[in-house]
Each structure stands twice: as C-alpha cells, then as structure tokens.
Length: 501
Image: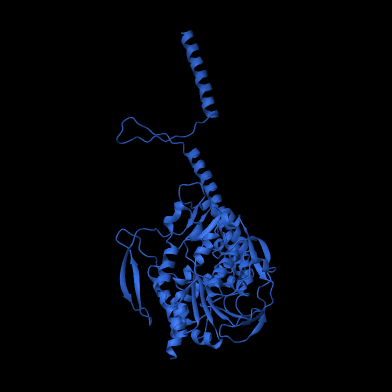
C-alpha cells in the first residue's frame, strides 16, 4: 500500500516536471493535411519559416529590379543627353565626307515618314566625338563579332557575300541601249550558275560594293563582274569618238587590287576584271585602248595599291600614266623629276566601310610625288565658272591620317593646268576619284590639261571639249565605275550633246 502511494507520488512529480518542460519549450505548429487519395499520408509545412524565406527572396528581387530600372534609366537618360545636347559634328575627316544635315520639315515628308527617318539618320550620323566612338567599336567590339572566312590561318574576314564565280555561256544579242546601237555579247548564267549581282548606286566619293575581303592585313574590294555593261561602256566611248572627229580618244579602265592581291584560295569570290577589259577593248571602235592592267601587273610587288583604302597609291598612278603617255606619243618624266613625300599612319576608306580592327591596327605609308616643274593651276566650279588660282596639290598638314588621298583635291570641280611642256597638246580627262592621282604625273606630257569628274560634270561634254581646243580625250576610271552605275554619267552627257543637234 505504501509502495503504491510512493509510485503514485513519483508519477505525479514526473508529470509536473514534464508539464513544466512543455510550458518552457513550445514546438513549431504544424498542419497535417490528410491526402484524400493516399491513406495515412500527411504533409508537414512549417508556415512561418517558408513565409520568411519568401519575404526575403521577394525583397532581394525587388532590389535587383529597382537597380536594373535605375541603371537602364540612367543609361538612356545619359545617352539622350549626349546625343541631343552635345555639339553635333558636320564633317567626318576620317571618311572624307560631309555628315548628314538636319532635314527640312514639310507636311509631305512627315506624312510619308521621310522626315522622321531623316531625323534618325541625322542623330545617328552626327553624334559627338563619332571618330573616337567608331575607333572604340572597331578596336574593342568588332573583334568579338569576328566573322572569319575560310579554313586557313591567314585571318581572312569577309564583309558581304562575295561573288561566287562559275562557268557561263555566251549568247550574242543586239542591244539598243539608249541612243547608241551596238552589237553586244551578253553573258547569261545557266541554271547552276550564280545570278549577276544587282547594280548599286555610287556613293559620293566613289563607287564601292559592300563586298570587301580583308586578308593578309589588306582590304580587297571584290569585283562582281560586268554582266554585259562593259558593252554599254564601250558604246558610249565610241559615240564620243564619233562626235569629236579628229580628237584622239582613249579608254583606260583601271583595275582594282582585286586583280593582283586576291589569294588563290579566294579567287572564287570575285569575277575577272581582265576578262571584262578584254571585252571592252574588242568592242571599241577608233578608240585607243590604254593597257594599264599589264603595266600594273608587272609592278604588283611594289606598293601600287593601298592596303587600307579602295584607291591605288600614287605609284600605281605613275605607272598607268607612263603607259598612257607611251600610247599617246607624248614625253613622260621619270620619278627623279619629282619630290617624294611620305605620310605615315595612313588608314583609308576600307576601314571606314568595314570598321575592321585589322586595318585600324596596321596603318601604312601614303607616298605621293610633287612635280619639280612649274605649273599654273586654275580651279572652276562644275559649270566651268568662278575661276580661282589654286595649287596642284593640297597641304596634307591639316588633314587627318585617313584623308591623305585628298592631297589631290576634291571631285566636285574642274581643274585647268598649264604646264611648261609646249607641245600644243591639250588633254581633257574624264575620270572618277582614281583619276585624281594621274594629274601630277602628266604635267610633263601635255601643254594644257583639264581634269573633270564625269559624275559631277554639269556641262555638255562634247561642246566643252571643243571649246577648250582639246586634242586628246582620256576616260580614266576604275572598273567599278566603267561597268557600274557611274557609266550612266558618261552617257548622260552624250545625250545632252545629241539633244542640241
């Protein structure tokens, strides 16, 4: 009896101590959810802990979102202020051109969308400090893009698609282009061949395709072929000869670097300039062809073409001028009669077109030659009015290193050079920008020289040639102009002549 009482008292004490412990430590509440389809199954969810985790996670995400909004907003606001408030540039010396002007508002241009598009072009083209921004993009960002071409280790980069070269068949047809009938041989591609490329209009400073290959630290413009337009060019030159009678007419179509420096494993990217030159020569009638191609090929291991620009170097112009002088039967001075000027750090138009870090980081020397003979130079506008005295060559000192080709002057003018060569020969040169470099090389060959850019010429060409008493007429332009969009400028001046008859 006493033992049972002791046990009962002991149990009571234990229960009291247990209750005290339960009152001191409280367990987290749990909810048991009996699954309707699973007998004897329960899910225990600690509500407080999960809720705290969700709150912390939401707070972190809110902070990240706010940071992103502030960062993007700051970038947009900063960009807006930079583009709109900082001074806008008006000329790009590294591209040798005037930048886009702010458009004039008209209701018609606004409703058509032309005005707003032009405003966008204006802000895009005239951004403050654009040259340094372009340099940063080319040097730091473009290499990340890295469009490489081919499997070799020459680091080739292709801008554009190139012009795949395949076999073609010739079909003889009769072309009645404009007012000049001519028997032509047009080239058509068979089903398995590449279609001829769509012709593009020429930029203001010269005609270029967007197909440029950069290989061996050299930019090469890929020639897309004439596809029949070489016959049109020849017919236009023939018509000038017919109109001018006793005037000696010459055609000198100039090759580009594509003919001499395109590696063998990339030959399929371009058409043959030489093949089109041969077709032009065959179609000429009573016109003297000047084979500059062969002369330049002989000297191709010399720096006759720029690596970073689509033009040739003045040395290439020298060899072409020498060939022309030989064809024309006039004297020609060798380089010992010139002062050589070397301008280092040249990076030309091909960098502008591609923004290639390879070209930017591998500048070249621009070397030109100043005649030692005295000349008198008069410059006119494109209407042959407003004469002013000028220098044969411009001072390169204020020019950026991308604009050294401009030592030969701009295209939108007519230049008359009177020389010490008193042979009674007067030469008119119709040219594109390639022809600018020819002028200094011919100052020992003709008594008078008139240099005119066929793209900007505002006169009746035949009347002008007769007015200045020309004995010789030279068409000197690169292949891209002769068979591309610029050839229509030759014809347009011919039409002016025919309309006045």
